[in-house]
Length: 222
Image (cartoon, rainbow, N blue to C red):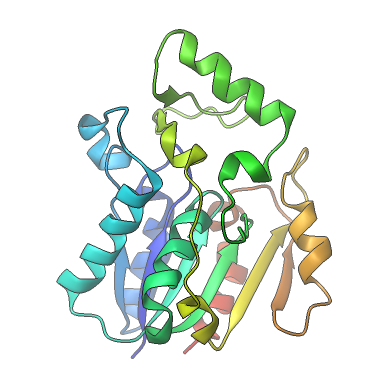
């Protein structure tokens, strides 16, 4: 049995990982499908003071509440900012970390640092009518998406050295989504021997578009 911790992306909720949560549980694994303050089923808790640290605290608290010792940690898209922060705290307990079409921040980098003018203009424009909140990006429209806390996009990740204790690092690049901010990580990691690199022929929501391939990769961490 392997324990898994799953973290969704911006504007989403734990529903994004529901299929994989159910399939992993059916295969006998324990799963924490993280609920993050102000998002998804907790959207009614939204307030403009929510930070990246808030989200990292959320995940660490849910790991503790579930009594997990060692686990596989996976994050989609912006959720990689959260799992990187969790890794900086709990790296020695993580068997593998999986970045699913996601950002890979270095110490002192925020999501703002890793995105370009298109995203920046959208973040700023969103403040005209909903200060502290960012609307879903154009092209990601869905009735299930909810506004995202701005400060989680501006606060930098701080590494501690704990994250280097993770023995396996896996990156999955969705190569059929344009424009993508993740090509920079594909180029950097596809030939890096410290990473296991995969490509999924699909759009950004790998969990929905290539669920079997993603499940196979997750189970390879057992």
